[in-house]
Length: 161
Image (tube, rainbow, N blue to C red; front, side, top):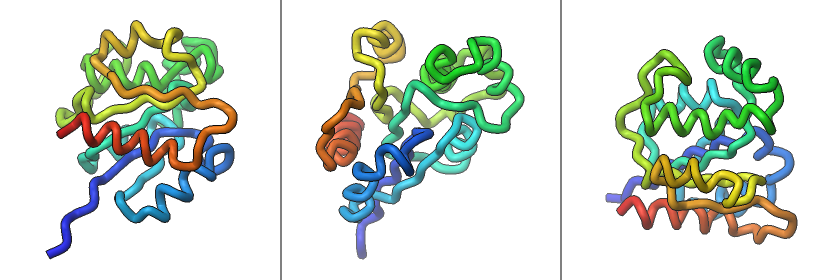
């Protein structure tokens, strides 16, 4: 009987366009069942209906259609750089912070299931990573290898064992 592929969710607003060279090798590998959420509302929906072996989160995310996430986005500057909804999503998921969003987060997610993949440097967000117990981090930069996303997923799954 074939083994079930690990499910992976990438929460990244520009994955289809700016980073398509990273998604191609991931899909071609056939190693994972892959989902993409391009905003926080979609990500929360995916996280509620399915458990993922690995979740990759960008820091700069749009809110999507959920009124609570839209309000938070507007309160923090109404732009992706200042809002950093990815960080807020992580605090909601892992610290169960009701001041971020009134609904309860899914209970299955843990820091070892998560990696952060963002343009911010590790130094810029290290305090958040430490506070949340997230150890898998990769900074987006020009010239990333096509296998970067695969390697990041492998690192998350190895840590989750």
